[in-house]
Length: 351
Image 1 (cartoon, rainbow, N blue to C red):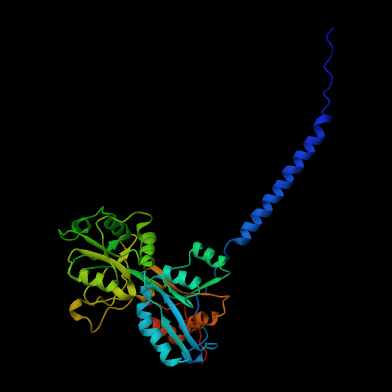
Image 2 (image 1 turned 90 degrees about the horizontal axis):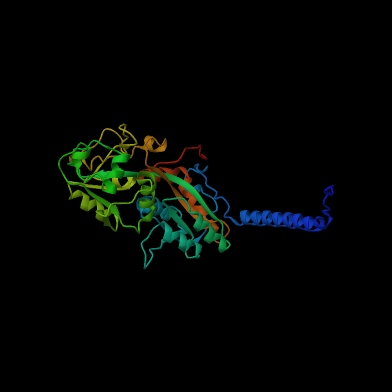
């Protein structure tokens, strides 16, 4: 008769099992702790304000420091430096500004933010939001960067004034810049070769915005002609019947030698300028004006904020904060509008 199977005795496995469970529990706690630590070391969200200040004029703005302060940034801010900054200099003489032009690189938002982190600038005029990599670099230096939206700009698409094109869809624009569309007949125009132009890659802010909002990850055609600045590109476009170019609406729309186009995601296209369109023969008295309402409510599809960026925990924080408040004052917003940009939502100023 076979001997019945006896129950197995697992007492010799109990202690190792307890140890294993304990180790697993300890490692899970350790992993959770490391995860929490990593979360805590990530760059904190950047404070972004989007409302005008309570001040009416530059003279009313409080806590404007005395001294000479350095700043830099995007070439798209050139009209602001001409119209707004010059007025600040004349009305707040204690607050002197020095625009820093990089010696070995192109002046743009990226190089300016790098100089800000290095302590060589007091604030930055930016055409884009901060990148996570920039926040990390700043945090490694013990800095907290703050960005504040002070106005809105658009990306305008421009062609030669003689080109009989009423507008383009965003897909058509993308196809032109990828090289899929090479002749104006493909978009309802004359039998004329398309010559796409762009700013050089040193003007990375505008290129990044165009690649994101229009190209959506697609690469540029190798047939593009690149130009070092807006002035050179617009002059070339004025001499090129088949040319097309994109850039800051604040700079393109008032031009007399090129034609900004209505654009849209579908056949319903929105103009970056106010109607009626002013023909080049009637320009410069008057000039075309920015379509403020369409950009403000984002009916025009290619818009982006402009930011003032500074380190909020550095000794010279006051310089960046003061510049921000000056631009957010009623006088600052009016001058930004005069420079071709769109004000942010209004508020009731101090009388």
